[in-house]
Length: 531
Image: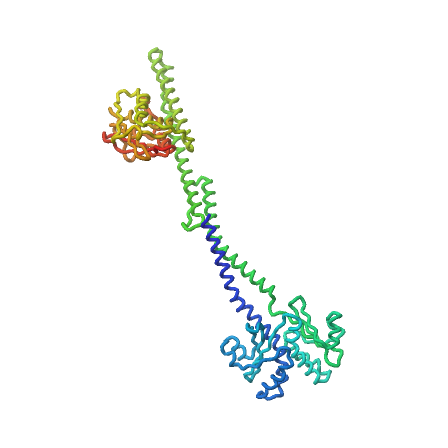
């Protein structure tokens, strides 16, 4: 869970960081280019008007003419030469190509346009400040004055041609309209009739300027002039880029996760269809690696349970078939004999077979009850050696031909031999080990008890034939026995050691097998001492 969260968090954090640092590049690239294009379109008209003023003047006198015209502007024009901008490669390159450049003077907190005048190296800086009506009017005042002068020096019938030439050099309309038809309100109409400049900024992104031409009922309209690029467009473009970046990042983050989950779903479907060998294979770096491992463990466990169930079913069928076959044989013989002695013998055999079936069913029920999670344990304190002696005396009376001995190799006080155990389960496990040893021992069983600070170990060894090493792991499986004998005289159904292993698991201990010092098998039961 944490690995998935951290990886997603880092991806989003890196994406946002890249977006934040990438926006200036966007502005410098796409947005700045658009602003330059827009500024050039706006500045083309002032540049054309000034060039018209200078066309009949030798270029050597342009500086003086421009300085004289500067006084007509609300913000005086400033004269420069190309060399003044040599340190700014981008601005210098545009001016050298007779293109308008824009900039911002941080010291004066004002934006400006640079108008080059070829073939001279003169550059006019025109400040742009339009934060309110007064500043907007001061910015455009000089150009409107020059337009009025040029119109005033021509007969009215030439005005449409002049206006058309102005419009051709601008990216916005330049019109002459009757004053009464000017798109202004009543208050501004009165100002317009008094010869004042009227500025309209429609919704903050469209500017219009109106000025009555001297000694006429006509008004000069400049605009609407739109913004180079709307702030709403920039915001929308930025959000679109951010959303696209996040979508791309999430796609490449989700794709491997989706593929791994698809593999998991396919494996689950195959497992549900009976393909028990199906497993999920994902990279160890996969975000669902733990889930895949859990699924594979579950599939392994299901396969083991089904195999165990099949083996158990086969074994039970075989174990039940043997006494049933003997009973069927005895019944057939009873029908064919008239001897009372034979009848009693066959009847006694069937009774023994019934008893064997009953014992086997009880043992199976015991094992099936243990094939589930551990029950709640009720531990009590016991003295291990004396408890073991009492159990041997109680349970092993049927094996009087076998000698038993309980030893403690190292000196032990009575206190150190104490442990907290579940007596009922421990008794069942040790009894099964003792009876198993008694069935295989030739003459002797040796029980050894050792203790340490946290555990005690109880071993049951015999002098019988022992257990081959290749069977020592399988001997704890149901119905697995070291010999193929099925005679009831041999006793046992191959469930005793399986029950012992399950009890050890419940009690938090272990059971192992090794060869005893007497040559037979030795089972070592190691359990915790503390409660």
